[in-house]
Image (cartoon, rainbow, N blue to C red; front, top):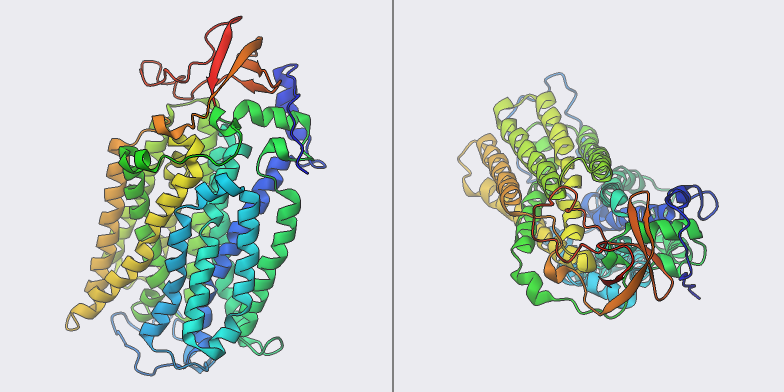
Length: 551
């Protein structure tokens, strides 16, 4: 049974800051929360992407593949290996059927991803994420049986997997809004995304190795058995360690609980329940539409590379399958490391209050998208220079990692109480390029068969660069990190009296429930005092009078 901690007292700022030395054992509980969240997101990506390479071992090969002699072959790079002597599959699935199988996941994913945050508010992220891991693990386990039965059963299973996993990431966002102090949020959200990227990185080589072995499950079925079992096993530590809020956790230390309560936003301290999500206000908000546009533009480049880069490297640059896999892994690794690094830098700027939060978000996002656009646009200029192309792709992902300080935390900034619901909406919108980008690539490549294929690929790189720029310009001109009026739940107020006026510069209040929290200093105040938009955030006005704080 969850145990509420409502009797915390503040004896001074020093005891709060020492919370990092206590927790579950020697590790703060919130760090374990983040670790398991990263693992859960990584496992979801392994089960999402396991078909991308494994399907090659499942289906019979078509000898009528295209042969683009756009770049010299056998130029000393060792790029030509005879990959066609590898595994021959059992299923006669056409290219169009394979496309439906690979895309089926997103049909279900988009549906539940949009409402995952609201479901987490109602049911709790602990239950939703745990159910997502367990159910998607079971669905992954039965794919080999379904494949031998009917391709349509595989499509149904993949749609169901998308439905199960669509709630996972917005649920994590909702839960972390309660657990993670504002100063640690940028790095935490970057780590969640990095976990997904790492899952995608390890899936391709793991799938290749398991598909080629004959010891366990006779090849490719082992991919689904291993990853499905991992998803099911992860369910148990998740349910043991995770609780929806710090107040409910039975093993959190008092110091860490006070630290979290003092440094999360006031909205994150509200009691979880069947909250109303103001979808009308959300859909009418200009800030939301700017976030939607930006995330769509950023996702276009990512999903374009994820889905078609292997084909470009093989058919145009003639890289071997092994080297192709290494390049794709390096790109994901570069993005993951970059997200962690720039997430840390973003948090550092936030902690030291080096610049206005809106300015910081704009700077990170604009540099990330515009820099990636420039590098993407240069790829056609280097032509068949394999080293230059690979270098540009990797550096493009490094620069794109600046988004960790831009559109990643902006969702929590503008809607602290509805970050999970808003993340679900924006992530669902950003998933549409998963269908659209491969479609556009196919139309461009198939549309002008008489043209030089290299010039057609150049069009695609320029298009991706232009879309990146649209996102950068929109975000730079119109976004604001100020919490929106609809972004905070208004379920009532708690009257609180000042228990101690200042503790090393921070104001703390003690509610009638004896929960000590920090009076809400909106972070835009320190760098944007001239703004008139903060009149709901100035909680610490008097030293002895009652304070009414919205929660």
